[in-house]
Length: 309
Image 1 (cartoon, rainbow, N blue to C red):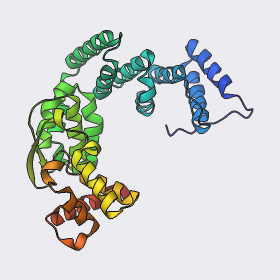
Image 2 (image 1 turned 90 degrees about the vertical axis):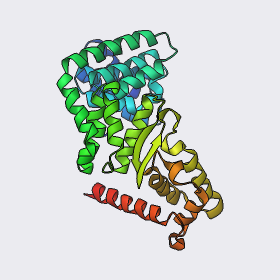
Image 3 (image 1 turned 180 degrees about the vertical axis):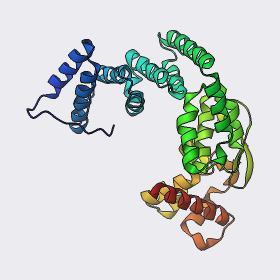
Image 4 (image 1 turned 135 degrees about the vertical axis):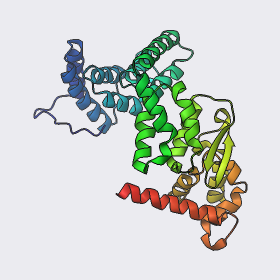
């Protein structure tokens, strides 16, 4: 989680560290418990030791108790797979989402709880929180909807902030129309558009949505569209690289990022994956995809400049 951990001068076993953290948490000493659990977690990770599920849950709850909500969300993101396996882990995911608030995390908690005994209780608590939040923060939600709908008016940094920080803070249902509007804007950066299109998949919308990609408007159905790296067209191109051209892993990874820039219209724009792959390998070939490849290269350069600055 990127923290600097100061270890005690006298070595303490990781098991003892965990026991001390547990005792501190039980006594309500959340700050001490968090510090001890962070040390326990770091040692366990460095030694490739199994991570105790209770330790994860109590660390996450400790973060929430001392209002370090960002750390709680980071823990849920880093250890989501393990947390999803237990009732207490799923409860932590929901608690972190509510505390932040982050409605995408709340939605994740409800999704992983489906089919479990706790699902109904979690859904009720999430609904109650959303109802209260909507009543108390109507102005915040309205302002966020405007920012999301017109996200294309901002710089890359502005767009990233709206998509990654503002969008998660309002209920999914309240953001849907704004996201739809943003997807038709040619000025939304491709990376942001991919994130917005992927976000719509959370809503399981079974309808045709317009989206501006590369050179014009296309249509996609969120409920029937796979994620970028699971897309059939992407898979076909990767197979072409690997089998026909012997492209190395580094090349394929860069190309995968380039191709994701035209999500969610991959199959509509690249109808001949083998020709596109050939253009990638031989830039001087001048196939029908030469202009597309040039555009992708330009977008990659823009993103590289932004990151370096």
